[in-house]
Length: 135
Image 1 (tube, rainbow, N blue to C red):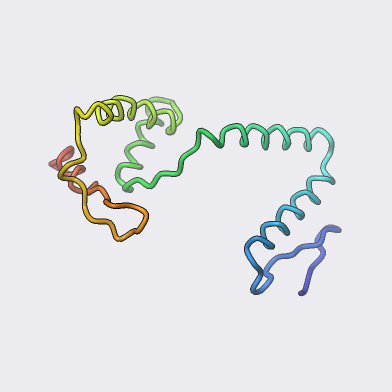
Image 2 (cartoon, rainbow, N blue to C red):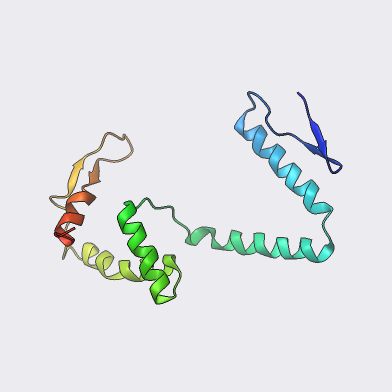
């Protein structure tokens, strides 16, 4: 295993065939090593940022959107001057309630899924064409 030294720090980049868990630990150690040499004020700021990010984890969700919809959401959020995550949450409150109350349905939009994790996928293209018939 060849290591390099940059600015007095050991760098473990480009290690062949390293287990991802080991690579993660090396990266964490390298970050801690660099942060330990920062001025106290900078360390304190970084610690506050990390704490803030940790507190937000329960509120986070990763979503995949069709590119066109993502672009429209970004444009609307920018136009309204609000964070995109808040815009999406705002827009979802009503349809989620309607789906829970069975006032709207996913019937007709479900397609077979090849994933063992899900029974079905939703036909977003069809929904998009119904909502935006001229596009």
